[in-house]
Image (cartoon, rainbow, N blue to C red; front, side, top):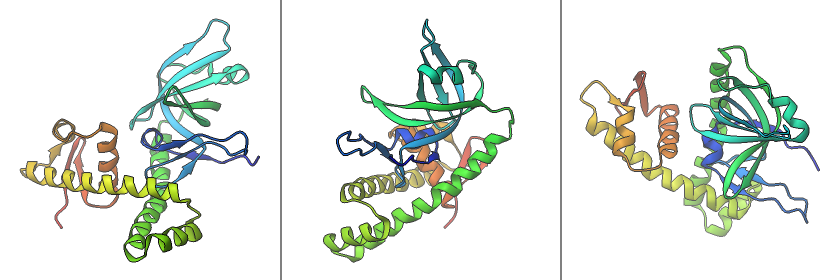
Amino acid sequence: MKREPAVKVRIKDILTGKFFPGEKESMKPSYLLTTYGRKVSRVNILATITDKFVNEDESYVSLILDDGSASIKAKAFRDVVKLVKNLEIGDMAIVIGKIREWNEELYVNIEVARKVEDPNYEIYRKLELIKEILPYKRMVLELKNMREKMSEEEFVKEARRRFGLEEFVLEALLKTEEEEKDYKAEVLKVLRELDRGEGVDVISLFEIIKIPAQTLDSILTELISEGKIEEIEAGRIRAKVE
């Protein structure tokens, strides 16, 4: 079976995505479909370790990873334990592994992990992620435009031809896009209503807009990348004038 590449992602991209279990009989690997349309089986995460557990015989280690967008559990078993047991709480680390699900909770099955010493590496990673995500965002937008101009049958056929997407993947993508579109409009509306010329405190948005925190965080990131809002200082944002 071909080894899938490890994709650089934010933790929230994992947690807000849709997980599709693999099929052993057909040798079909499991994967995650992110909200911006990327299929991911193996991930490359840069995060800070906020918690750690090692069992008595050191055959199992679990870490809690936090990259500022969200947190997720990462697990190491047997021979891989030696690669992570020296990592400590507070360390920034690169963790590579497969996405797995247990008891309806997603986690990363660690393959490789190492400590990062350079404090500037986090900035480089954020820039890399923006470049990685934008092409997929454009793909979702193009799919949406295609759907408005074609019959459902033509749309599914053309999406499969151009992007190699199966019908159930298309449905998941476009459903998420429609939900986020409505949320984006609400966020922009609230921002404009609250702004008195000095921007709006981000924390107040999380208190006022009653949607999951990870979803709101994702929407704010997208609105900034789309140029519709801007951060005028740490923790304060405003909608740009159209």
